[in-house]
Length: 85
Picture 1 (cartoon, rainbow, N blue to C red):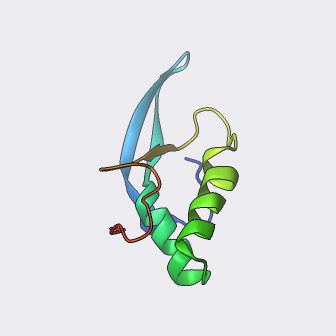
Picture 2: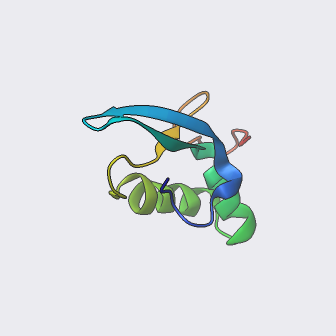
Picture 3: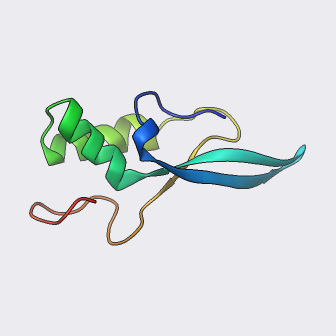
């Protein structure tokens, strides 16, 4: 299974994707946890972490099937002052 490096703490499970070769398992990541990892480990602001995730993680192709990114509640990128879980 393929996924972005450095975000193992954001993995919330394994999903299944139908492909021409049969079902394949994919890693499932929580976007909020990914943002929190960057804020905590890379000393980024909330806005910097959100932008990084948007352009460098969600916008890249990692192969077929790639990982799945989910937002548990609310918008993908919370506004300043909102809680990151």
